[in-house]
Length: 124
Image 1 (cartoon, rainbow, N blue to C red):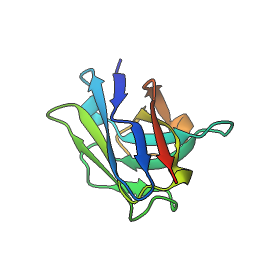
Image 2: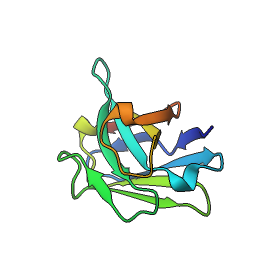
Image 3: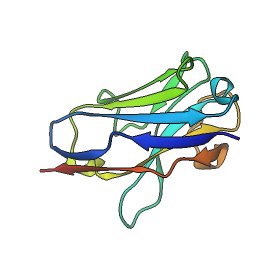
C-alpha cells in the first residue's frame, strides 16, 4: 500500500509561484501513474494534472496548461507540481493521488490512494 504526504502549499500573491511536493512510501510507486487534483471550498474535487509511471506522458486541465508542470523522481519516490502565474481561482486544497495502473489518469475513480492535501491560497 502506498502512503502519500503533500507539502509546499501556502499563501502567495497572484502571479507568484509555488512548488508542491508529494512524498510516497511503498514499493509500487514507480509502477503507478500519479496525479494532482484540487478541491476549492464548496466544490467537488477536480483534475489538475497527471503523469504516467515513467514520466513519458502527462495531461493537464485546460485551466492550468502552460502554467503548471508535473514531474516525478522515481528514485526518490517523489512527485512535484510546479505552479506559476498563479491566479486567485487556483485557490484550493491540492491532493496527490496514486493511480490504479501505470497510466496517467484524469478521473478521480482511477486513483486508489490519496494524501491528506495541502492548502494553496492565492491572493489578488
